[in-house]
Length: 400
Image 1 (cartoon, helix red, strand yellow):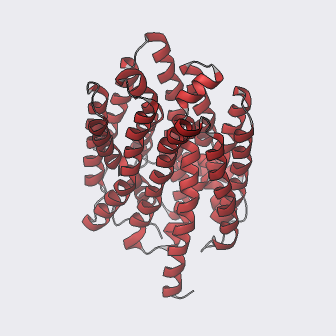
Image 2 (tube, rainbow, N blue to C red):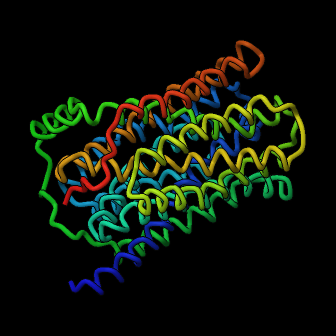
Image 3 (cartoon, rainbow, N blue to C red):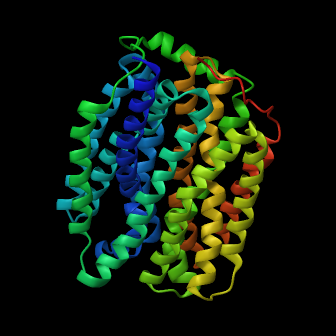
């Protein structure tokens, strides 16, 4: 394929991957956005609601290393196609059922299906985009997650407030995913041939080698603590209702302003990194800004929707630093291990969400307030920039 045709295809690829990622982030955020509704509808505790979100994130986290390996063995295209089919099944199961156990299983299936997408879509973009645009391309797709999150956190309160039901809205988005899956059948294309399968012994050796790599260790550990940012996003709507006396609709507005701000946040952080030709400096700056914004939104006294929305917007713009990890890991690892490295950091973060989300809700049930839960999250947010002080800037070390 000529250079011009490859560039044109890269943009087509980015477009269809963005659509998939928008819907998958809507599905990821759905349980968090519906927390007040599901607690009342199902008659469950905060801890049980935390476990329902864990049904998604636990399997999503456990699948991250296999997701990278599946991409290496069978190619990103085939991996994305088959896993998205599983997501579609989970979506329709979540839509038609009203019992906690079945919703738990549906969340589990959506988690399995969604788990392979991000890692393998990043691999496709790193294959098709030129070096000077790799981080920006990853940033643009990552930014599209904000659209999906906003659709969930703003859409569900609006629809529920007006119609008293959320399932029709949910299934409409599910149908969009099904149509996009058909698009991906025709549009996704691997640039390099896959290895042709997985060898368990080689797989285990590769994973161990990446974990033992001293350059990777601060990335793995710090990204595990980044899970605290996700947990705050999951619980923010309920926190704003319980602790700040906002209505469900107002809390949804505040949360959705943040998720909307994440769209330019991911793009801006990635573009700044590419233009500065640095990764470490922007990562440290925006990670520390995330901590400060987290602290502010938690300690602010109950007040206006505008004030909380503004602080939440700053927090979500700053948290766009996470996209840099997905450019940095391929810059410190050889090409045949980059998928494993990306899978590992995504795994530890998602497993952290699975662990911390029910703990967060359980602490609220035990203490009757949010202080212990929020202090736990603030410590994790601060540890991200502290741990990344150890690294050397990896810019310019792209694996080809």
